[in-house]
Image (cartoon, rainbow, N blue to C red; front, side, top):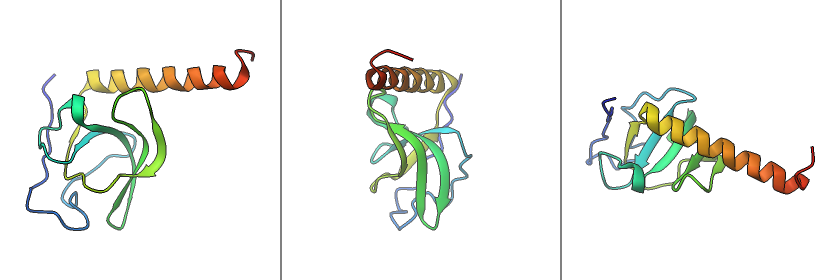
Length: 112
């Protein structure tokens, strides 16, 4: 599948560098601070939740697909984004599910 990139112009460092980007709630996006192509190995992967004023909020995110943060604003400094490919979405959801299951087992001692 062809990667869909939606680079944000480098000359848009204002309070909302993504003002020209249409995000879809629940979709996975890759964000990068300096590289418009948003390579998977160095990007922040995040599921879009909402936009309030000039702030994007994410349902969950990860930079390594091992450690996940949930329900937070996009950290400052990100200027580029693209929608994830289907295989990236599969990797993200698989790893997020595995992490959540592992945390549940650790909390409950493996007992239901």
